[in-house]
Amino acid sequence: MVMVSGGADSVALLRLLSSGELGVHRLRVLHVNHLLRGDHADADERFVRELCEELDVEHREVRFDVAALARADHLNLEDAGRRVRYRFADDELDALCDERGVARSAGRIAVAHTLDDRIETFFMRAIAGAGAGALASIAARRGRVVRPLIDCERAGLREYLEQLGASWREDASNSDTERSRAFVRSEILPAAQRLNPAFRVSMRRTMDLLADDDALLGRLAGGFARDFAQVVTGEARFNREWMRSLERTMARRTVRDALGRAFPDASRLEADHIEALVDGLADDAFARDLPGGLRAECEYGTLVVSAGGLEGSRLAPGLLPLPGQAALGRAGTMLSECVDVGDTTGSDDSIVIDAGAVGTELTVGPWLDGERMRPLGMPGRRKLSDLLTDAKVPRRLRGLVPVVRDGERVVWLAGVRMSDEFRVGAQTQHAVRLTWERGVAWRTTDETGA
Image (cartoon, rainbow, N blue to C red; front, side, top):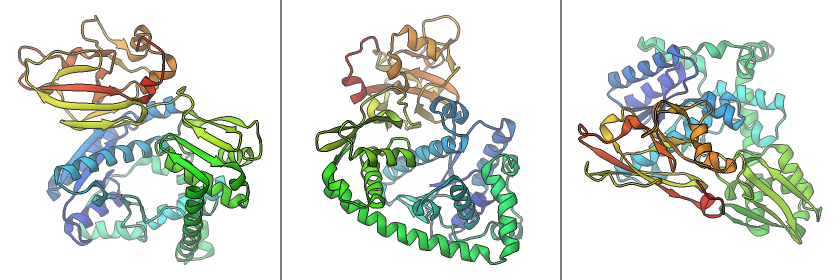
């Protein structure tokens, strides 16, 4: 699965992969339109589509309002965009592996990060304040994500494209020095280059050394996490006495390792949260709320971190294959299946839609501020927030109500209303049933009306 934005780096990656020069022969491209730059973003989408047609490579396009997600989840645009891209890529890769009878673990997501990206990230993190793991910067591989160009310089990739006579798209926002990455790129790196013309080589060596040290400490922390903590999905329980026997550096890493395994979908915990948890190991009365609806508190000899609250929790966006399913974490599972046109029986949690009305990929995610739909059986267009209020969905659960979308159009506010645009009618030739199987977030609440 090749992530292609249309920029020079990702275009070079696709051309190298499609040529077979990197030993890969089974490709599919995913392009995610963040809907941030209007006509320019649409032009990027068309460019990638035409490039894939030229190279005879399968491709998929997804459109998602990243700005609205960033506002709703209090994220910066870069972080929100990254989360959206990787979530869609994971879902699409799973579907591709299933389709071709390949183990999901054998699939790879190729992204076009370069040595320049790695160095820029090092400086951004150093300026903000970071430990050795973060300063090791971008890894060549993490899980299923691979970065074949991580040791290549950006200038070399552009030279390669120019030799081919190949074009690419330029994102004007990359030159906006109000953004930290653009500032590092335009101000700091040229100064470093003047001080040491070979600084990229020395920076790569420094980051590789940091990565080696971090990997060793990470393996040690993983062992302590297995011995000193009980971890299941949704909860981590630390033995306070044993954890206090560790040096603070190792205690921090052990806490982070255990929490990463217990809450794989949680927002990243910042350094001050980890420091607070390590301090809390020595405090019998310690209790603290954490991002992502987590709650930490001491219970006698144990520090327990659990998904203790739902306020502010929101679904991560993902693809919904037709047919297939999308895992929604604590909100449950969304299923899609082809059915006879005459099978229109439904309920709040199961509807039938006109498959012919679907124009792009179906996605599932949280409701967004200001988003509207034309509800079936109701006049005019209504805000999703108003529909949730009318349905008496508890405020703390609203971020876990799935919204099925076709591009930018709402198909179904699950459990509440479907859109009139997708109703089955006399002209319908093919139908799809969507079913929401509610998860633990709904089973553990005594609220009604959702």
